[in-house]
Image 1 (cartoon, rainbow, N blue to C red):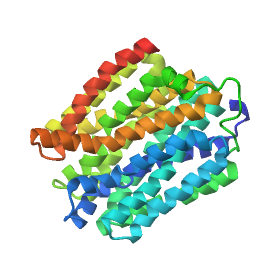
Image 2: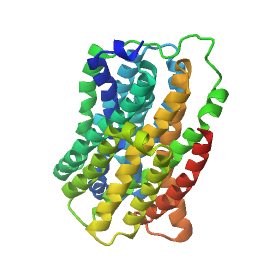
Image 3: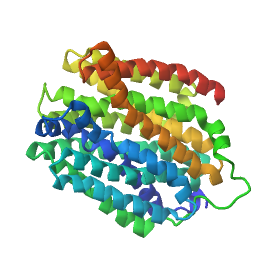
Image 4: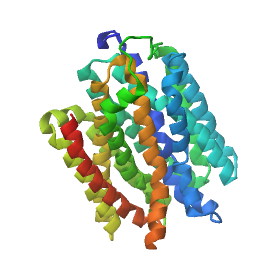
Length: 382
């Protein structure tokens, strides 16, 4: 199937799948401060798992994504993922037990674990090289556009009642309608003599597997800690606006992603890795709103570049018969970084006797320097 044979509505539907992935955490992160107050008798690390526990379940389902792609077409996979997404997301609005909420977040994660690699694999599979680079940038923008809307809306709903923010996952029902009407039925994994082993695929894309892991390990200190830190300084609705601004920065970079690559070339990945470092250093040292604003800007710009860069690099390097396996690996690594972030932060805080919250930004600053160094290996590999 060529790019020209894909309808506009099919493209819109493929991009709409990206809306669900950012909302897994971003939609609920602004409400985390209110949720923490409601469950004040529980440990902070347990509360923070509301925005990260789904990651381990995503890892589980992405691990099996390439296997399921042998037997189910893209429309069936999307509907299965969206069903789990809505049940796990909206279901948390009806319970008042932190452990049940975490279990439902796991169900949400199983759904996202099917949707995320499917959305990137479809772009890499259906479109030519020029279009896939552009569309992966758009995919990042679309997902963050939803984050831009969801962040203040979630904070507003949480201000009414801590559990109302979970209703935002009803969006999955709207996307399901588009999937039923417009998503092409494609078998991502057909029997082919050019399909290679997972070991060989790993050799082809391992710099990007590690790169996306480091990127998420760096970035995820933001959604897991920003709301909790800022809850002591301002009202929840303003926290949502600030987190929405960070998504706006991601949107801008995603829209011009292909242009950035054309203009800056190899320099781009080093520049945006440094943006991560500058962003989290600003957040760590923040004593006023200007520091917070600069931190949000740099973190948003860096995140807006790194995700489509990693995914498009894999999309250009791997053949179509191996795309489902490759994108499954990338998704597994991405969400492993998400899941491990709060635990690594907790270990570092315990060892050095640091307070939770702001110290996680310092950790991300350190890991962003490692990401910057890793870009030299990526540059050599490419």
